[in-house]
Image: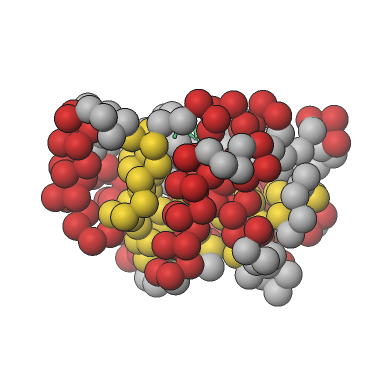
Length: 251
Ligand code: ATP
Ligand code: MG
């Protein structure tokens, strides 16, 4: 399974989901690769110190002579590996102008490492540009996090249209794995309404697991840990463990 965590809306929980789903898969004994496609490098820094980064995805995506295996590094967790990002990734789009294979770079680089990893999780940037399209071309599945907030569904039409375009031109077998409601506050009636609205649009694709608002989830990246080592008994850990179970049941 290669799952892209995508939504062009900023701050909806993509990185938090990518980091903790990848960690949960590794805890379940899956050899897992977390690919950070966001120049903000938030998911990289959740596991790898800035000082230990020599190369990043930019190097392999811009230069054919650099294999993905040369940029992958160990995380702080057993069974979990990271393909790190750096701010330089923001230059990739300009670098690849006019290259015929610009949309296929990530897919081409991932193929040779698939014998090492049974599960690949890709954290996408908050945009529908070249980087996210590379993720959708390379992925077998897409997981869409949607923040439980008043404007939750704004922009999902554009995202679904992009998925359709990628399916039509480059990756017909791309499947919507599911839609995940994040930062949910079950005490409020607004949050309940929003969840119903999301269910009206996406039906059975909405995961039964809902990620509650949790301070622990917000804090864990600063300690360079997943929620499972930082606060194993928190609701955040229980929520992401439950998501992992559902994901594994769906693929
Ligand atoms: P971007 O679009 O900038 O990449 P994102 O979609 O990756 O953002 P995150 O970085 O995962 O979103 O989350 C945005 C902010 O919300 C972060 O500060 C994160 O710690 C916090 N956050 C994420 N999930 C939760 C949660 N369930 N409860 C509380 N805070 C959360
Ligand atoms: Mg992010």
